[in-house]
Image 1 (cartoon, protein in one colour):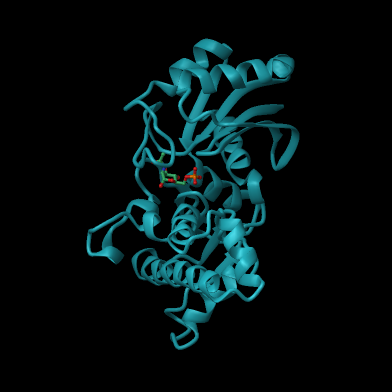
Image 2 (cartoon, helix red, strand yellow):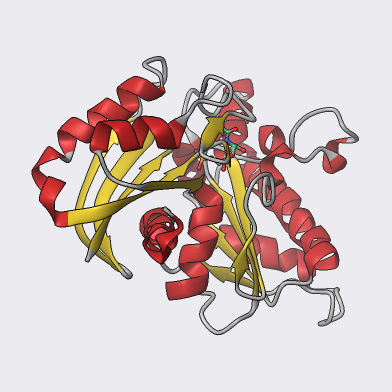
Length: 281
Ligand code: BMX
């Protein structure tokens, strides 16, 4: 039967009834940043009250790090969360059903591994370039949890000066546009770049170069069969090809194999539902 699957991201929250890779019901609400986790969870409870007798388990994919049922922010700029918030206890108490919590990108990695672009491989890395930058790793059929995959927080490309996502993600693209005197979001910068505005194309290509360099490093660290690229930026027109253009001189053995995420915005809820359904909850 169905699983209630919830995806709490930095800008929006999705709740859905999921059976395998079928999203049977779906609702999306804004994540009110200042309201805090108690409010976000009770909003989902009210919004999905009509589905109460249609599921027995709950999967929760969240931006931030989950450890033994607790939830913390690594980058509060993406979403401010009280440290070690008792996410699973709060959801199980309010909804009255067993719950399983996992990071949103780790959930998406599992979703793509099971039902999307990663079916048939044994070692997959998922990289989402969106508001922040998230990632997930599946090694020989096992999803890595905890801190694993938090590529947005690494510092090696900036000699330790700032987290990778603060110089590459959608939030960075928008802040660079503002430095150029344009108050537009990342999607707007892509539109201007497509219309031939050089300043915008330059920002997009700097982001893509950094993401491509990260993928080269991931290949040497984890040697995945495939790197699945997701997120609003990662899947924006032309971005994946820009990334691939930096691998042309690489030997085939070292060149990362990038593929576009197939489950799109549903990857996280499908992955979280599958893991919750595996009676991990
Ligand atoms: C941040 C971090 C990751 C998350 C990634 C993408 C927080 C709150 N989030 O690096 O856990 O996976 O952003 O988040 O520290 P998204 O909301 O853009 O999907």
